[in-house]
Image (cartoon, rainbow, N blue to C red; front, side, top):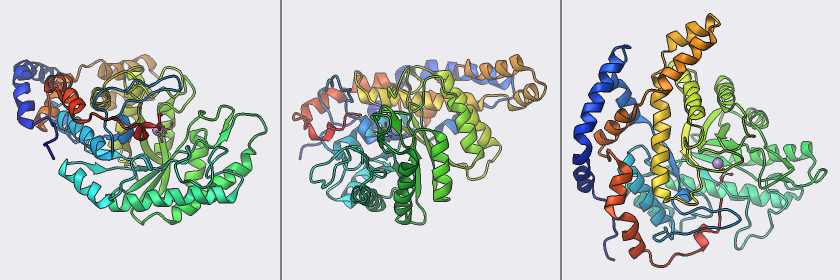
Length: 433
Ligand code: LRH
Ligand code: MN
């Protein structure tokens, strides 16, 4: 088999020679500026190098909407080619060694072989995602009217068994978590009995919990609406929290930023779930209206910063059981998915580093002295600091690209893959999200 096109690290180093001079100047300048507020830039760079963000396997192919999908040349045709693309993103930005798979979209014929392939590409598997929001070939019963909460116990059992199958595949792959998002709900008043549906959800998720290995976690993902447009069973963080508490210590609440009504204060929900010891982690993306699945930090970067402000505050206060997972969950309808994933991983790291710049003592004093403008100014001081040199040096020191987008474009990767991946198979991307 001919060698597959990939970006060599020598090429990345060679590309870095173009920007390294200016970067060192900017980095030194920022270092001096931060030193004046007793912040050691090296600590921040080291922290940036340690941040880990999982990429969604379904994010490397072109997404779409119910109106249209505009596939591009060189789309990955199977889970192996998806991993190749995830590995390319990791090579360039160095913060994304983890991949989150979706079953059955990524169901491997040989899970052990897939694990070997991932390891050969320096990748490992984060949370597995089950899928009882579509009917799959060979499936006996339909999820049209629900899955884990369906009135028919046989459908609920089928959905529970699918989740257990995801756990079994995940065990071979080395994953340690299962994310459960269900589309269950109704489009008409009266269609779903809210209390019975929630009881059935708990009965079903209890059965899934029993199949969880001792060192696994289960993440419940709430969503206000879509595809159900009148009522959704797990529609908000409160319902998710109640269920996570009922289901026990292995279960916690995953926050997908796009799953809330416009203008909901998501950083407050994050602070609550941290305080209640039930924050699982995130599906980072951005949105203007609904679950738009746009690139993280592209629409509301201040909100992303405020979310990380809560996360860093919890980290610094050593809040018990605080170990959130950071994942991207996006749909790249008009951009090269790899460029969007790289840009999004960088924006998540930016928000984290800026949140680490917050003068916590000054903020606490302003809060305790009821000085709102000083409190806001303290946050804005950090948010308006351009930490790009720190992000670039962190990538460079980890063997990545100073300018991932330019290096990727100069590499000809997309063209190379277009040549290599002549036939774009449709079934992989029937799951337009
Ligand atoms: C639902 C969701 C969920 C995934 C799917 C791909 O909107 O956010 O996390 O299963 O997108
Ligand atoms: Mn999600």
